[in-house]
Length: 182
Length: 51
Image (cartoon, rainbow over all chains, first blue to last red):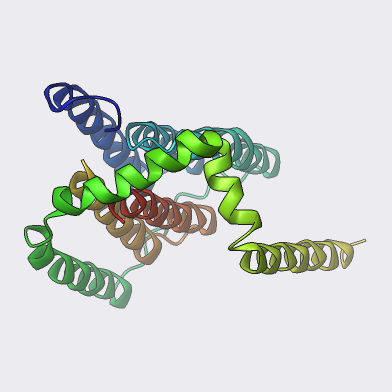
């Protein structure tokens, strides 16, 4: 936890548990609620809680981006789309039955079975010091924004540009799909 | 806190997978995919503290 000594680490851990519970409750609300609007509002709760855990993990820029992009733009846009297109009234036959229910339990059991033996194994706190010190020195050298921007525009510039081309393809596809209706 | 973050990420990913497989509404399926993407983001942040 950066500059804090070991005697202060209990308080962030308490807040981490609070926000983790909020995130998990919101996620369960997303899956369980009948109305898409309520589901979307639960999703905004979950995104805000995840952003709070980003702050507790000292990824402050990512937390701000999470709030601005997800909760601020994408989710509000979807809320507008649902309300304008009046999609929130189709409650019947929303659950997939039969094979999908069985498949979901198989998949979830598989993921849990893969993850459960590894939970106690990794001594995360032992290696945590190295990564934390590297991040702290990068933040001290470039600032919280520069610690992300510096590798993004030097070391990882080619994947960054490829991601830009992918977004361009998505924009062109959206325009092509929307133009068919005119 | 890193271990707890990874556990939280796994729980959120599993909830997203469950919702994607069980719900039929396309918007809620999209939201569950977003939940999975955010869980992976959280695990990336946690791993960045680790290595």
